[in-house]
Image (cartoon, rainbow, N blue to C red):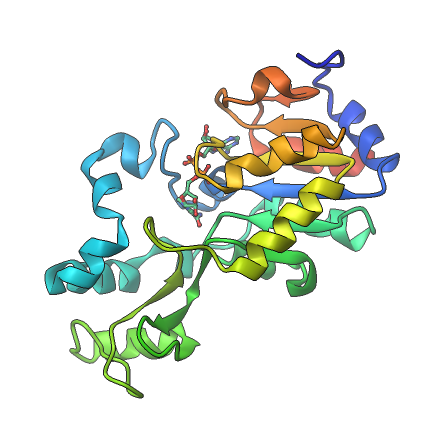
Length: 255
Ligand code: NAD
């Protein structure tokens, strides 16, 4: 266990000030205050419906038209497309604007960091984004709204207009590989981080959950901000448990 396990926002703010390379990793927990449920928190989608986790594998989507029809129906209603960024997203955008962020890696697919003002240059949406669709055969991409218009007009499982292939949101499902370039960039940033903030993530989805371990291995400090325990709490330099919409603005205000 690390020597310094202090949990005051001011302490973390001090570490941010004295760091040259701050890397932030966020998970579903930063978006719950925007009304998007997480997966494994007390009100999480998978906590309430454990069978949904098994059905999240890409093989079901490819094999079964009924799964795709259901997916398009729920995409058309997905709260992520209507949700607004919250104070936590805005605090991270401000950290970047004030020159204190090397890279933001988010596991979230809701696009809310970019809407809050984080720049595309310093943001890696490592699990993709629901704001675009992609063809699983030819790679054709486009804005999600274009595909959703077709769903609303009556196409239950819209096919690719270029090659006839299966369309899906441009997100990484279980069973799909991450984009190599995104993973490499995130790993390199974690290796070089002198401060790594893991925010609103249960740190259980690999290979992303390994990023903080890489930072520790290279002598970076690790701070975990999460309402519930994570497997890395015992190795973190500080753990903060408050609501992210309150804790993050308090930290950034003190930087
Ligand atoms: P997770 O659901 O496994 O863990 C989220 C954690 O956030 C929980 O431990 C919970 O206690 C904590 N949390 C929730 N609300 C909080 C708050 N207001 N303040 C402090 N902590 C809070 O999420 P994960 O680790 O990101 O892994 C889930 C996977 O699901 C990711 O790969 C992600 O791509 C995907 N996902 C994304 C979204 C989204 O885009 N918003 C939503 C659900 C799931």
